[in-house]
Amino acid sequence: MNKVFYKESKELSALTPQQADKLRADLSARRDCSCRARQVDSRASFLADVRVTGRDVPKPCMTFEQMGFDQTLMKAIKKQNYDVPTAIQAQGALL
Image (cartoon, rainbow, N blue to C red; front, side):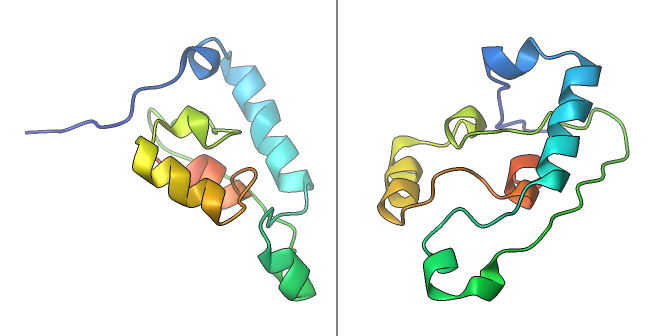
């Protein structure tokens, strides 16, 4: 039995493969760590290199809301002051 818990958002479903590749390139170019860790430790900021291979690779989620997490987890994320997913979270959290 194969269980699939992730349902792609309408916004992500509308993206073409080329648009998803552009988002990945944008993720690779941005400085990461959008949380308060950046305020505590400047070493928490780093350049990400997002590369994906394989079949049916999910499109990157640019917001935590696009990940389809339940309300309890979303509250915990917001409480910790995370604004947007890091590059690895954007692409890899759903795998």
